[in-house]
Image (tube, rainbow, N blue to C red; front, side, top):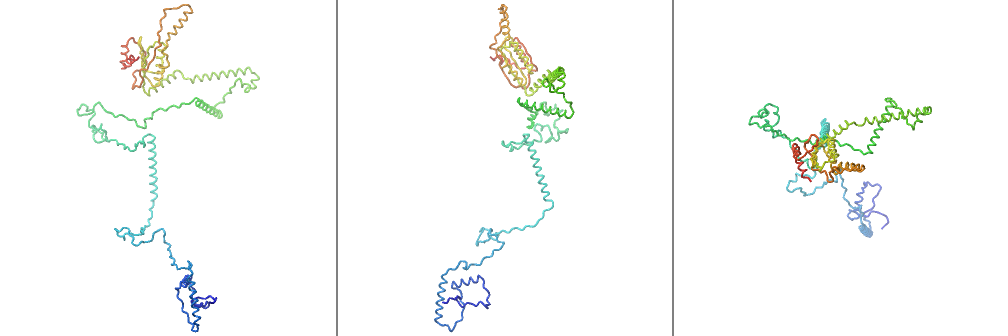
Length: 494
C-alpha cells in the first residue's frame, strides 16, 4: 500500500479542467456518511485488461481491511443524519395551543361542528364619536359632584342640629312615618280627605255657630295635642356659663388691659390728638426734674410739689367713689339676681324651731328672708315652737337654709349676757337684786328641716311674721293656702 492518498472507490478526480459543480456542505456530509456506513454506491471503473490477477487480489484485500477499520470508527454527532429544520412563521405564538388532538370531543352529546378550537374575534366597525359627546359627559359629572356636595352640606347641618340617626343604635333602619293628610280629630268636622277645603264656607261639616244642634259634636271641651319642642331648639336658650379665672389670671388680664390703654394714650399724644400730660413730680425726684428752680427757691418748689401730690390723691379717691356702685345700683343688681334664680324654678323649705326667744335670732330670721327676696311666713306660737315656710329660688333657699342650720347658734340666749352684766354691776356697787327674772334655758333648743323640694307655683306673694296664742289660729291661716299638713307634721316631730 503506497503512501499516496487517493479515494478508495477509484482514482482521484482531476481538479483541473473539471466541469462538475461544487457540492454543498450537506452533500459532502451525506457522501462521507454513506461511505462510512458502507451503503454508498460505487462508481463503476474501467477494467484494465492488462492488470495482473495477483495485484487485483492484493488490492481487494487491502480495500477490505480499510473498510473494516473505517466501519469501527464512530461518527461525530454533528455529522449524523438530521431532519431538516422547520421554518417557524413570524405569526406563530408559542403561548397559544395550536395543536389539535385527534378524537378530541368537547361534549359527546352535542354536535362537535358547532365548536371551534380557536374562537373567531368579531370584526368591529369604525365608529366616530359624535360632536359634544364628552362635553355632555363632563356636564353630567359636574352636576353629579355638585349634588353630592349639597347633600354633604345638608347632612352636616342636620348633624350639628342633632337630627341625624345614631348608627350605633341602628336608628338609620327606622323609617319615619309620613304625616297623615288629615288628623283623626279633624275627620268628623272637615269635608274631604285633606285640609284643602277648610278655608271655604262649606268646607267644614258643622258650623261653629250651630252649637245648639244635637248632631253638632263641637263642645267647649277641645283636645289640643301636647306641643313638642324640636330637638334643635332644646338647648338653644340655655345661658352660657361664665368663665371663672384664677387670681393670677385676673391680675395678668388686668395688667394687659392697662398696657393696651397706656399704649393707645401714648399714640394719641404722638399724633397730637391729646395734650401732653404734666410730669408727676415727687419729693424724691424733685432735684432731678426742677434743677434750676429747686436751687433758686427750694421752699416754694417743695410747697408746690406737695400741693400737686395732694391734688392727685384727692382725684384718685374721687374717681374711686364714682366707680363704686351706689345703694340703688346694688339693690337693682340683687333684684336682678333674684329674678334670674326664680326663672330656673320655684323651691320651698319648711323649718321647725323649738324656741325662738332670742331677739337677735328673730331679727336674723326676718331680715335675711327679706334681703334674699324669699316668700313665705314665720309662725310663732306663744309658749310653743316656731314654723318657718320659705319659697323662692334654689340658690337663695340654699343660703337661707345654711343660715338656719349652721350659722345661728340656737342654744344662745341674749338675755343671759345682760343678766351677767347687771350682776357684775350690782356686785361692784354692793347691791344684789334677788328678784331678777329667770332667763329661759335654751341648751336643748334646735332647728330642724321638715321638708325641702320643688314647686310648680308659689303659694305666697310676700314675707310675713305672725304671733299666735293657740293652734286654731295657726290652722285657720294655713288653711287659706292649703298647707295645714306642715303644722301637723311639725307638731308630730320631736
